[in-house]
Length: 212
Image 1 (tube, helix red, strand yellow):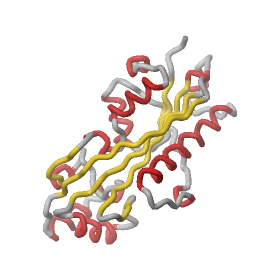
Image 2 (cartoon, helix red, strand yellow):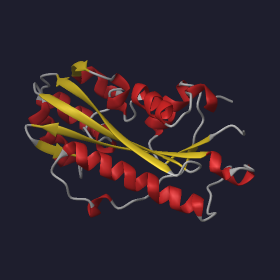
Image 3 (cartoon, rainbow, N blue to C red):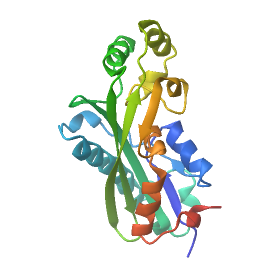
Image 4 (cartoon, rainbow, N blue to C red):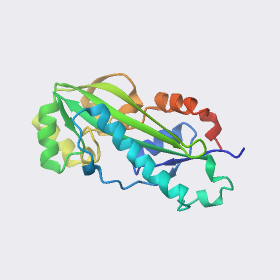
């Protein structure tokens, strides 16, 4: 059996770096799925549905032979797995994705400071060979620091919060403004590595199968 290939249906550098740090080099192939098509008020259902739709959109391409670069050299395309994720922040019963602009990010942080939010990340894996899709969700509680207006404006001015569902990057400057996490750390970055390992096991794979 040939070494399985993992396609990451996400443009997130942070997710790719998490996999890289674990010895896995995914093929990055963003799904470009229009998230506005999905309107759900339950955060778990929302992130799981979005992750599944993103993964399945790339799986459809693979099944029709429209494979991303590098997969064309694989003799057995059925060794391909597609991983997709989606994250949102729940704060005081409101669901937040990426802020629309700097002004929105500033207002969001004024609501978040001193509060506790829940970061939900949906995970979906499509196994082409077994024709199986599995979906799961991980939740991490995030305790935000009590920032001053000046700190909020300075942080938003860096541009970092604009690229993050929770309006902060725990692996960047945002780490200064989080008091503590309850739950999986990598989940806040966008991909729960323990959950990813368990999902691979559910499909009959070991993470080391993806090491080159």
